[in-house]
Length: 111
Length: 111
Image 1 (cartoon, rainbow over the protein chains, first blue to last red):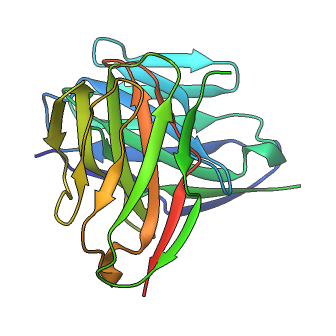
Image 2 (tube, rainbow over the protein chains, first blue to last red):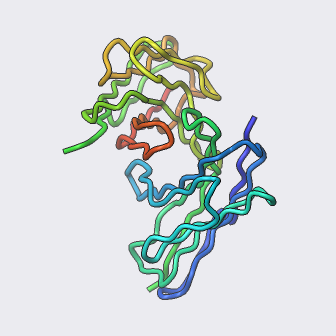
């Protein structure tokens, strides 16, 4: 079955710098890759997703890239702000009904 | 307001005492799912349902039951809870390869 590895587990950046979180997946048939942000005391919330027929997707300060050959995808946050501090999860699936999540990255943006 | 609600939000119980965590969504979603979140392990799927009366096991179904008698409700049942089921539980709903909306979470402690 699918396995998703996420790195780093913690990331500390200065406000205004960029942050990059990387995930690798094992199932070459996976075709949907969402990213979720979880703030303290809340449930995860989708921030961006990408499908396997697209190599990159951008939404304001957030972008995701997908390399199907290497089976990895990354989340890029530019011009980080303190409110970006949260836990971020990547996920992968071929069916959408069975999302497999990475172990999470705790991002801290220092003012 | 579109949302997924869970009750209770916090629960302390003892080993073997049956409990039910309710989940309800008001977005007319066909798909609903339960996850547990443990430190360092990310979110792991317990059960999911693609429609009324259609349920299937996720990655960690042992010790749990679910039912889907109505489209909006998807309760999680622990017939005989054990300490290793102490965790943070999330219910989610959504569509095929679309945004999954997560509830606020239920923190369970089994003594």
